[in-house]
Image: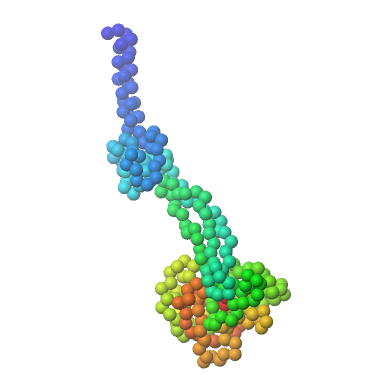
Amino acid sequence: MSARALASVLWMVLLAPWRLWHRAEAGCSEERRCCPGRDPSCASTGWRMDRVYGTCFCDEACKLTGDCCYDYSQACPALPCIVGEWSHWSGCAEQCKPNLRMRRRYVKQEPKNGGEPCPLLEEKSGCLEYLTYQGQDCGHEHVPAFITTSEYSKERKRRAVSPLWSSDTEEAGYCVEFKTESLSHHCTVENRPYARWMQYLREGYTVCVACQPPAMNTGNRRCSGDGLGADGNKVLRWQAVGNPRCQGTWKKVRQLEQCSCPVVHSFIFT
């Protein structure tokens, strides 16, 4: 055997263990693969995360089935869903009657490789507009009292909704305490995200309802359904904005300058 042939044989002998080791280390990086969902063709041969040598996978489902290649986490890092900011709340779907408003946000990056899924992209909330498209005052003739969560007041655009209110009267308001007498079962079973506040309405509880612009009538500066002139024995009616089937009765306890009830028992006239 010539010296050249001998050197070639020795090189192959020395190279064989490296080839075996290199093959054993094959994984997602070697195959340059990262696949969505469950893809049987997205596979390699090497060590798996469960320390078993054989066929391993580089798809998102491998985390659930436990057959990912050893380097899956490094080669295919989990990327969470990224969403943008909420849009401004829309106006009510209809004027001068209880309805819904909504806001949306959009996906800026879809989740990959088992990353955190996207959150809710749309929210709804009860609302009531007090001006027609022609600018006429409306909505104060509604009976019974329409209420919604006090969280709505944070988003209320008073000057935009009721330009009749000046800056001198913009902060005016008052609170009315009521003791609930009855309510429909539709309140307690409500589980839509924008209406879950209705679950906290209970018979026999004292609740606070704030009267704020623009729910105030521009003439008498009162909120419709606030029980003006009613004594503690008069049964008054109320209805939740966002679910007309959530309604009931209550009795007026007293009127205050400010509300002091717990947040879950604090509402506003709409």
